[in-house]
Image (cartoon, rainbow over all chains, first blue to last red; front, side, top):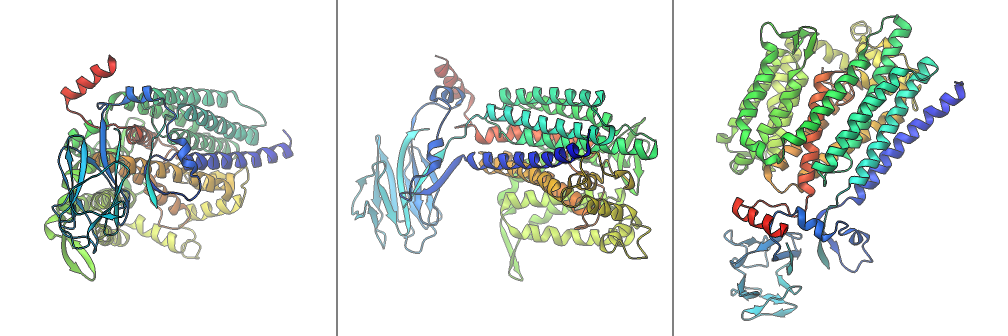
Amino acid sequence: MSELTIVVLRLAFIIALWVFVVAALIILRNDLFGTTVISRGSGKDKRREQRTVTSPEELAKMRTDPEAVATSLVVTAGPLKGTTIRLGASPVLIGRAPECTLVLNDDYASNRHARIFPDGDDWFVEDLGSTNGTMLSDQQITQAVPFKSGAQVRIGRTVIELRRGPR
Amino acid sequence: MATVVTYQARTRRLLLAALTVAALVLGAGALLMVDFGRRDGIQPETLWEIGIVSAVALVLAGVVAVRAPFADPLILPVTVLLNMVGLAEIRSVDLVYEEFTRWGHGFSSRQVMWTGIAMALALLVFFIVRDHRTMRRYTWITGAVGLAFLLLPLMPIIGSASYGARIWIRIGSYSFQPAEIAKIMFAIFFAGFLVSRRDTLALAGPRILGVTLPRWADFGPILGAWLCATAVLVFQNDLGTSLLFFGLFVVMLYTATDRLSWLIIGAAMFTPPALLSVTKLSHVQRRLECWLDPMSSANFANCGQINNGIYGLANGGLIGTGLGQGRQDLVPFAQSDYIFASLGEELGLIGVFALLMLYGILVQRGLRAAIGMPDGFGKLLAAGLAFSIGLQIFIVVGGVTRVVPLTGLTLPFMAAGGSSLVANWIIIALLIKLSDAARRPAARTLDKASAKKVEEATAA
């Protein structure tokens, strides 16, 4: 084999090696999974399109837990942004005190700030006499009010959303 | 305005298959180029080597696709590629010895055999370990077995020392480094141990010089690990193994507790034994001198390996001499300890950077699996295994390129040596298994009764 061919092959090999590396990096970039916080309204987020490719039936087969509607609390703003709490049958206490279910590290929150509790299938939010108040969809609440999924509760700098969906 | 989105991981079987084939094609190309460089034509034994490795690798990819469908698609192909490039380099070293010293070694045929064995053992992992959480039950047993493996080279008849370090066992003509296997055992043991103790180990204690130290009562575990590491250093005379084990423990401790002070304490604790080894052990002392100033007139004659390695890297330059064109026979251990210098000579700076990128991707994928892990044990195990690979690469490549003193560790998947290949392929199998668990949607533990109910419900 001629000298020239070997030189060409040699360079081609190094280029091919790098093509593999770059392909791996691209795959790595497109292979996001898990929970993440994205900002809404800042143009179309391409990552949305890659939600599920596996069909729901196939997913159901791999699941080890019952198909059921679960409700979770999701923190969408504030220091705890991205935190999710799965709601069961017990009420959730929110505030700065350590015994709270969701402990806020926020100077604008009170020790025992608000409570979120179930009544049948519905969830309610109630202010526990906090100093700075609790806002539901920008309205200050004075008594227990229904907390619908998608509505936002603001406590100090923290915004909490209720989400319903299959587990 | 922010919103929380959950992305579901997908099964990436097709991608896994495509990447594995691409890795095999690239690796085969590397092996054939060695033939063209040294022999002017394709040799039949090269085709055999390619055939054997490809067959086993494809079977392994098939098993991954079936047993771990949600596994990370990059881990296996990247490892296969690194292994194949290592094989090509070892073959090149073999042929250069035959050409210039008329004295063949047969490193490459042995390496092909061990690659096959290592991949087969990795395949077995998928059948033995159905759920990684079962490994937690054997925390103390794996710890004890790991310790036994680590101390095996000190046994009278089978233990064997060469080049200053007593880290091999020799049975007949076969030699083995049990520390490589002990590495996996210890990662499992540390993960199981730390996941149950991490809450106490994270408690804050006295504050000294602006650093919040842990409580004095919690120093027991790290003291134990330190004693083991020092014992390895004193009785086996090997700084690399000792550093690898202690580093693994300290980093897993840091991962478990999220306390930076443990890292500082770990570094402070390891300094005295390291300094002791430098002053007391003659071969470590020589390595330190060769690290600091290998080309001075006083050291030049003693530091032939380091110097020739650097000359080899320099000869490779930016794009290398090309596979099968280097003179690796001038460096001792060009096929094992110094394979990085051999690769640097033949692939050049651009080539070895690609390889380092591949190693980086491998470690990153392991750490990513750790982040996505739903249980603490798996999280710690994945982080520990990924870190052990990363630290080993750093120590070896750093040793060859004079960033840190040279030690006797091996470059994972590349250096010639059966124990290293077997251990690292088992680690890869575990990481693939763990990444599958990390990415599988809604995998939660249920008690047996309700799990059975679900099974019946989904079957109906």
